Length: 378
Image (cartoon, rainbow, N blue to C red):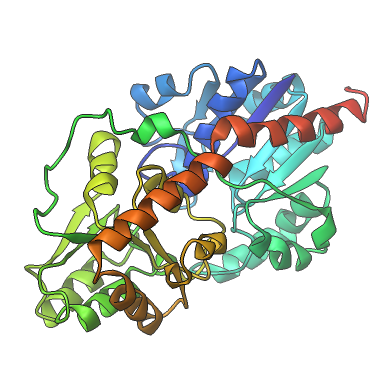
């Protein structure tokens, strides 16, 4: 079987959760014997990232406009890849590349599936552009798919707004590779504070809620004077605002902005933090929660992160998406280090049992075989 996975960005810095999901899923899929090719845009890609995707292959088109991930030409390459594929998997939604691949697929009658990973709602900036995109092609991309994949049931209403009922949507969650974050990696301290710290991992963007976490930390900082707060991730438009707020709150000596982290530094942050906090205002299913969980790190997250099942371990781990909700969670959890350690071990066991990629990938294979087997190939 030949599968073409499509995502606008897959590099470590700008690919985000969708890029990481595509990366992990593609190399795991290829390891089963599927001929998997990833079509993406060049930009932040380096040879190490491309090599790490083996045995999956990658084709990266030049990018004309990084702001909106507009490819520079490439129509002939897109047409060739689409014709060679048995099935196409479109990741995300607001994507010129997805639109071009969709048009090529419709032209030759190739089946495709969509996995927006939480991207369907009109949230954030460029709202009028997103409305125009849906009018021109986005609605059709969703409606005409052979299958619809959600990473969590929280996406059912998103699909329903495009006319796809919940029973038609297949839930396949995010996955994780334990080897990427295993304890055999050499210890890393680097820029991390020596004191106990709370960790935020992700883009400094409004949808990710770093401002909510900063407000919550300010509220509880007097109760936990030894704790620091570490923001690890690239600027998504809020760094200046967060830095100014930190100074106004008098917390500059306890709040740290590391910028983008990856590899050993990222694993080290997960392994040494006392608590990861995912304060997102909206998220399909938090990949960083899985990354921290596989390291045995407890996770506090909002009820907008698509990972509410973690509340079965401890009801205090899921809170409302507000500074007040996050502050209440911090107050409830930070007072007992031994208890946090036990929650971390339980979280690791949950992630190992349900979210390992070798297990998750079987659901994709079953879906692909049913789609390809149900119709003759052109």
